[in-house]
Image (tube, rainbow, N blue to C red; front, top):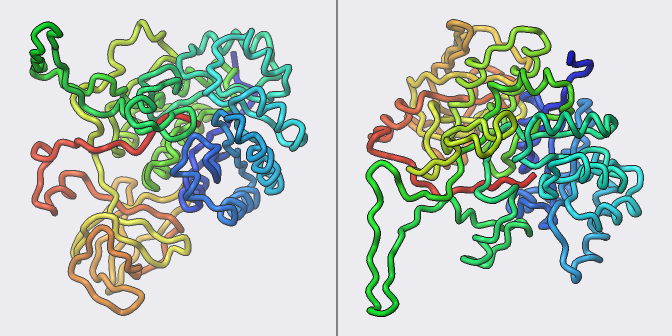
Length: 449
């Protein structure tokens, strides 16, 4: 089928800064929320009402959209709170409400009848029968279950052509079925479907054999090279399949997971998928380019998940050896919105050269002065730092991650420009190597939209 429209690129917005970064790096729309009624409690708290309102206005001023997440499942005691929250969100005029529960769909249609309803992936829609039920309830878009196939998306669209379909193309995957997990609730009392998952599936586990008659317990040793991260799913990465997804002509929106991930992730991943989508329509699709950028981010290993291949056909979706690993690059600094200063994200010294990653459509010209030098090599921009001076006139030979000083740029760069370096160089500056510092990090992300 030849596509007759341009599919939307939808990116995560964990706070106002990350929302602006995603929009500047190519998102057509962003999604996020302000409260615990979203399935990202931490990111919801990073957005207060004032910032969220400012974010919606920022997006609308640029012709972009914002979808508000109200996609947790309510207890009876919270129904009035949901009513108040939906009414409050409706006043901000988002472009859609993302919900999971049929009851909340009905509530939202009553309180905010003019705002479209998008059905969360938490509803686990896999077929046209269920899709029809939700469409009849007034849902205009369904974020399909991660376990669905592209063929099943085509089948749904053939039955309900007016229904918009949204698919996840990148980000965290879940050990359970589209987030229907109780491991965290059992171990820590934090309920995944209430937005407070502790990511227990990301941890290493030890296995024991116990004899109840003798009371003897034996620890079972793992097989070398297999690992004990027995429930840790690899991250979804569908960049190499964007052409197939768009060629189907049935997918209206491609969604990136990651509201709790870093500003670097928000910018680089969004930009990579922006390029993939645009290149498909311009007939110059090259998956190697997008994968190279996506590999710069921290990840749990990548899998192309289930949209193209059925779950039972996949044997590479788990990462047994680690929780998360370094990408090929480390962010060194993030430029402020005005493009006049930068904040350190990794140890940086006078004399360092860092690569410049620009927002979509931004360009800069080579230049040099006493503070720094900007040059172009093989289509990439590089910045050599000649001086590190803060806005308060402090001078540094080196500056470290976490330092709150705003460092003056030698020239104005586009707002939210990213400065990065190869990971080997970043580790060397700390006296480390990749082999000596395997990543065994407590994860910050889960999967829900």
